[in-house]
Length: 161
Image (tube, rainbow, N blue to C red):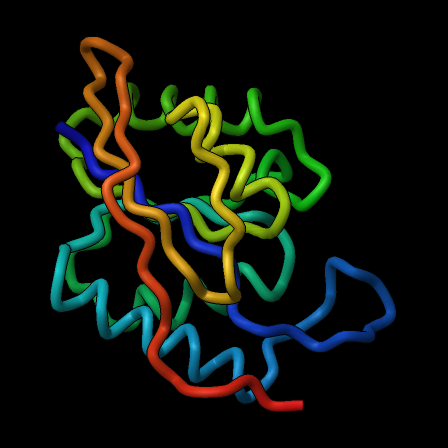
C-alpha cells in the first residue's frame, strides 16, 4: 500500500508579474510549516512532486526541511492549476510504479487541479482544498484502487488580510 499526500500550496501573494511567479505570503509560510510539522509526526515522506510554480516549490521546500527520508524530488508542468487532472494522476501512478521502493509520496500543487486529481484516484470524491490542506490517499498499486482516508488542515488560526 502506497500513501499519496496531495497538498495545496500555502497562501500566496494575490498579485505578481505572472501567476507562475506568485510567492508565499508570511501567512502561507506559517501554513506550510504547520502542515510540515503534522506530516513529520505522521509519516516519513519518500518523494515530493510539485508544480513548476514558485508557490508550490516554496511549500514543498518547507515540508522537505522537516523530512529526513526524501529520496526523490521533481517538478512538472502537469501539476499547474490549468493542468489536465487525468494526465497528472497517470503521471503520479507512473512515478510510483517507476520508483517501487518509495512508499510515501507528496504532491504540492494548486486549486483546482488538486481536487480533480483526488477525484481521478477516488471517484466521487472531489474535496475543496484550503491553502496548505492535504488529502491523504491510500493507493493499492496492484489493484489500482485508492481510498481518500483523511483531509488534513494546517493549524494556524485565521488568514491574514
